Image (cartoon, rainbow, N blue to C red; front, side):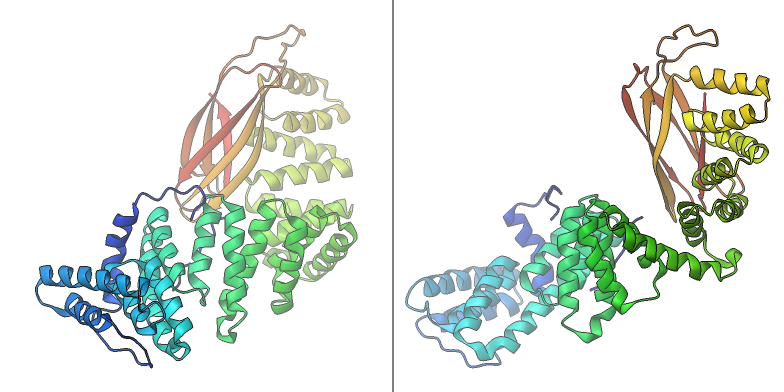
Length: 473
């Protein structure tokens, strides 16, 4: 699932191409616009020495009509104010304040942050004035970052977001969007840090409830991705204290309980969810909720009810491998051999290089005493050069991604003669519920010795993808 948050939200590992000097140039047009006119401070400042000269040079640097004079004015202001703050005016709030303003004018947000911090320490009543410059700068950089994020330019978005967080940290939006970029780039540990910061900031302001909720839920999601289920449990419980009817969050909590070894808590919560769903019209449930009901019923060994649920899901989407596979296992538990034989065929049509598909189908034929069919399934199984186990299927509005692991097998022919490893070409098809092919990709699997792994990855672009299948070419 792709996380998405765009509002007024680096990679430890995400390359930043700008040098410090280039960074100032890129920030300058945005930061300077947030303070493009010279204004005196709206607070009491103390200064002496040549601070007044630096102030005049800053005015020139901001307002002169001649570009060359503006550049010279800013250069002069920097020299004067840096010299003064390093010397006789080190305790002058005015010197630090106007140095910060000059840093903003040249796009140096780190310098501006440091100088503003020093100015506010020396002149606490300037907090409102300084906060206004910080927030205006933050807004300008955050807005540009969001534009880059929308355009799919994650590195540029991070560049602007990073600058924004240097200047201001009391709103959650930038932190949350940074978390989203980290999460979608599979840097889940870093994403967790930023979602946690977004959630913490949001809790301080009652008007930021939506941000608080989304950041907290996203934090739980990335913790679970990282296998940190024990850490996700209290986060999900806190979220559910605010949103007790969020079914997806309740299911996530049940999963987190189970992964954290809190089996009794998981069982109790799953039972409660299933009982609630069971009182509803099953056909009115979403596919995701219906799948959760079926899995919970199966885990509770209510195999007849589980089979009914998975049959409904398979009818909705015959190319949902999870629905068909779960249906087959429910039929196996119920010893419904006629039905399992048909469902087994459906599984083989979806993933013809998977051992489980043939074993389930072969078990049904064996119980039905259909010896010819048993032999045919067995021959297909033992001759498989690789076993393909699909490890993930992610659907997006504009496409999908399938990942799998191929593992070499000690294949034989029908007479038990060892077969040499051979390469295999698979055609992966991404399909709609009706079986219409939206996109396809050919994947090459090299000849693998028994036990040797090979990762498979297939990507598709297109709308309405709801399932997959592949075939050996």
